Every structure is written in structure tokens, then in C-alpha cells.
Image (cartoon, rainbow, N blue to C red; front, side, top):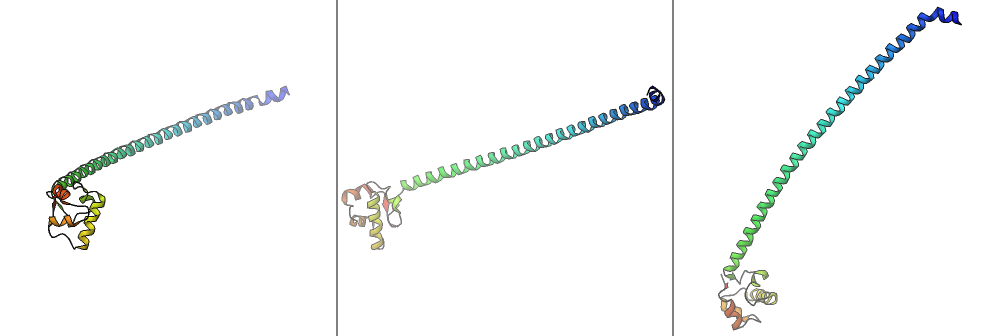
Length: 153
């Protein structure tokens, strides 16, 4: 056996040397592959972060637009409320007013407002404001309270 080892010592040394060299090459290539893979993953993460930043900016812009629309709607609502308030400061046409308009009048609740609407429907409208006294529940005292608030056009 010693003779066998002596005879193939050079071959065995070359084999071991080549195995070490090839093993080193394989380790280096794996290290390079892992390094490239790591760089690729970092690059993909950077792309995702960038995309999230863009989406975040888009969402912020949409929120700002919605807030502006809300502001405009609130301003329009306030304008409508002011117009409605100012219209109630004027005279109410008892021939065209709806239930809610009529209940704005002093001493006129929903029941009397409905009675006014029923009367004008049966009589084809009021000819003058004095005629409102013909509605059941509206006498001279109520008429005095509302005569400056109503009109017939």
C-alpha cells in the first residue's frame, strides 16, 4: 500500500490541488451570484419605494382636490342658506308657497299651512291677501301678524 501511495502521490496531490481550486472558483461564483441577487433585490425595493412615494403624492393631491371641492360645496351651501334666509325676509306669495315656506309666517304651523294650500287649491288661488282670512283658523289677529309678510302675485 505504501508503494501505491508513493506511485500515485503526484496524481493525488494534483487531484487535491485541482479540487481546492475548483472549490474556490465555485465559492467565488456563488458569492458573485449572491451579490448580484442582493443588488437586484435592493434595486427592486428602491423601485417599490419610489412607486409608493409617487402613489402617496397622488393621494395627497387627490385629498387636496377633495378638500377644495368640500370647501366650494360648503360655500355654495352657505350661499343657498343666505339666499333662502333673505327670501324669507321678503314677502311670501301665498299662491305659490309650499308648506315649509308658509310655516315661516308668524303663527302659521304645518296644519294651518296645509289649510292655506287646500283653500287655494279649491278656490284656484287667492285674489288678494285679505282672502286668507277665509281659511279656517286664520282670523283677523293672525292676519294682522302676517299681512306684511305675504303677497299674491
